[in-house]
Length: 233
View 1: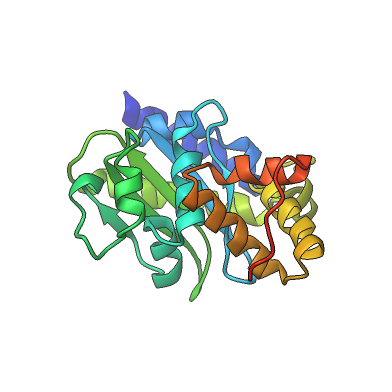
View 2 (view 1 turned 120 degrees about the vertical axis):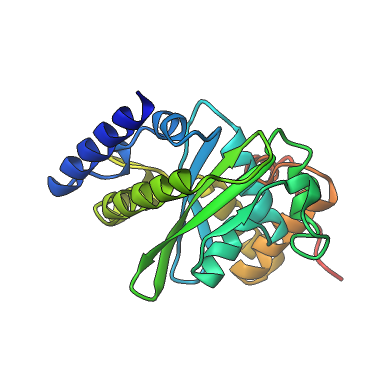
């Protein structure tokens, strides 16, 4: 039954892509269910090489939480897939080798997620983004499941290519960048601390990690004026 539903979903998304549809036509929760995953995310790779969470189930915080952890800590399966251009699999985050993701793996183990698979969205030799699936049960991903994820990734890439550039920045008529508040806060810090935008982002991530706070929470407190980061002496 699920196999037939998955084929129907792919067919409908291919038709949407053929008529100029974008990622708003792809239901994240339904795709995750049919792929036998507990969370599914798509991150866009910017020209500067940074990954921006673009698509996930808005009703389920698990995927965005894990993507934000990777953004804050600078390591993890989505980032590894983007850098290597290869599929990254970890069958048990709680038992990952110590040297693989020394910061991300212990942090991820405090969430319900146990297994992860990250599939790069390739445009020739370039990586346009990464599709990452999470599962709360440890264990390997069967070959048919990996093949289905690859098939979905190809359709998702077509939809991504049709997503208007202005929608990526504003969220109007399309998916919104998940971390818009982070970039707004970083922009404020460049003026307050007289630092580069990259340094401002590092400051935000360091504060979030040091105080064990979600990065978006830190960004919003900066924007509201409730938090002012001190100059670095």
